[in-house]
Every structure is written in C-alpha cells, then in structure tokens.
Length: 294
Image (cartoon, rainbow, N blue to C red):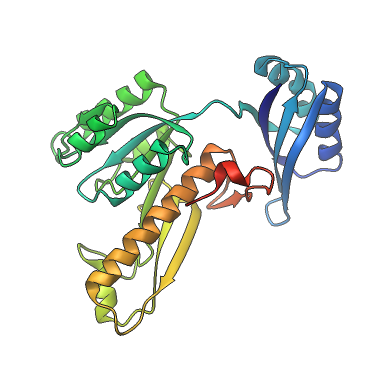
C-alpha cells in the first residue's frame, strides 16, 4: 500500500472536488485526509489530498491518468510520494541556534528530511556538521565574487537534487537571479521586529523601546528582502523585568520553533503560494503524530 499527496491549484469552479474524488475512487484509492480553500478575492481554488493506493499503483501512472481530470478545470497539480523525504540544503552564517535545532530534530526523526549538505560563508559550524556525517561546503561571499559564489550554490542544488533551501540564519542577501530560479523553494527565518528594528542588535533596540512581544517570521524568499509570502509566525511575551540577554534567548527559541514549523508545512506539501500570501493547510489529526513539534 502506497501513500501519496495530491496538490491542486486552479480557478474556482463547480465540480472540482467531485472530479478529484471520483478519479481516486475509480483508481482504487482511499482518501485519508483532504483540505481545500476557495479564495473569493482571487477566484483561486486550492486543495491537498492525502490518499492511499491499496493496489500499489505507481506514482507516475496516477499522475498521467489525472491529466484528463485536470484539463477541463485548468488545474496545476502534483502527486508526491508521501514516504519519500524531501532533499534539503541548509545554509548558515555565524548564528547557529537554528542549524543546531534542525540537526537535532533531524537526528531524532522529528524532522523527516534528507539533509544533502550545509553551506556556510564561515567555518564556525564545520565540525558540528561533519560530526553528523553531512557534507559541509564553505563558500566565501564578497562583493567581488558574489555571482561566482551563487553559481557554486546552484551547482550544489543541481548535483544534490535539492528540493528546498533553508536559510538557517544565513546572513547574506541572495540575488534576484537566485531568488527567481529557486522561487517557492527557499525558506528564511527572521525576527519579527522587521522593519521596525533593523541592524546588528535588534533585541537590544527592542529592549530599549520597552517591547512587550517578541517573535519570529518564516517566509518564502523573494527579490524583496524579508517581504516574501509568510508561512509561519509566533510570539512570546516579555516584561520590564527581563534583560536584553533574555530577549535574545527567548527570541532564538521562537525562531527555532517557527522555522521548524514552516519546514514541516512545506515538506508535507501543506503550503501554497497565493500571490503575496500563502495558503497553509493545518496538519490533520490523523497525521499530526508524524508532524508533531517538540
């Protein structure tokens, strides 16, 4: 028995759900979970269906057979093997809390991905990465060599079959060219003070302004710096009695959690880019155990 995930995007129309469910039933498939959203403002329809092929029909056969169903509705669709982990390339600079958190979740099986490598413009976390038996790639980035450095990154993506790049506090701005080539396939994390508190020490600025909530935002990367479609956010409350160091510690904790949640949503095909926004379907009760967060 094989488990697959079908994702569909198209213009909203009557009969879409019936056509999809009818096709799956006709191919001897059993729907385990289904989520859908009709965006009345844009007229777009989004659907995610998790289903089991009790007859073990190959993925490509199901994909090809779905074409006549999709055509009348103009559907953009994909069928994924739910048991095949997504290949992920992590990128980091000198703040290692997100990297260490992701490596821990991956090691204990809480983050079901295939980490194909870690890229850094510094050597700070080389030993940590190598000790996890993961390839480490040092790619120095300067104003002069940035096009060459990004070409190396794209070569790594192609050679490793990378499905997703995660910027785990990678402190280099990606070019428009790289953002476009990897559109919808790069996730970044930052503190939620942007654009209010920019610079090297935003938590100190927040402390000095008496901020009562700090948080983090995970989003898809676009050419507009830190303004891509948001996938996940969270906050934590702070008080006047806490120090700037407390702000930093709490901020890093929430960054870890938000980034991990965003990756989980993406690798389980629960995210859809909808213009400047996203549609993010929640994990179903039946599948929550495999996506639960620590």
